[in-house]
Image 1 (cartoon, rainbow, N blue to C red):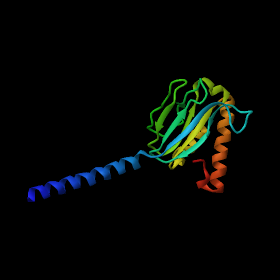
Image 2: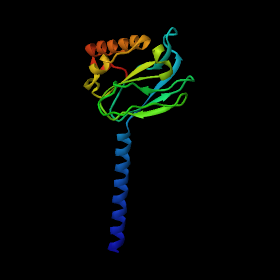
Image 3: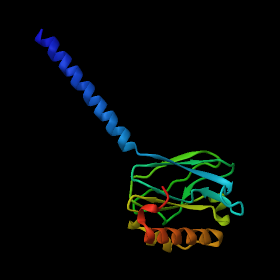
Length: 168
């Protein structure tokens, strides 16, 4: 009789442990954010070849899903625009892609075929300031430079007003 009570107690304990582990895993997985890859901006019809949002603030452990809303786009990190030790990424053209961000910092990325048209974006992860200024100093060209300059200015301006108002 005491063996059956022990068995029930062990099974109940195992069930509680499994539920706790599942809850911890779900919490650790983080939130999923969506970035659309578009031929035209939905907010400014004059802007072509854009990521929306172009600036995204996420927490460490969050995932960004790049959605190929319009055909012919991809997401690729830009060399020297990542936190130290982070591996570069590149998706396939026309395919949705997910990337989980496990390290604080500022991440610059582009659509490789449309970089020259200014199709670039920033992801600010956790304490993004750890490499923000280094990433902002990375030389760009053409319309990508213009858009990055606007994004860095927007982040700085928003940070001065109220640091928590950055895009989430």
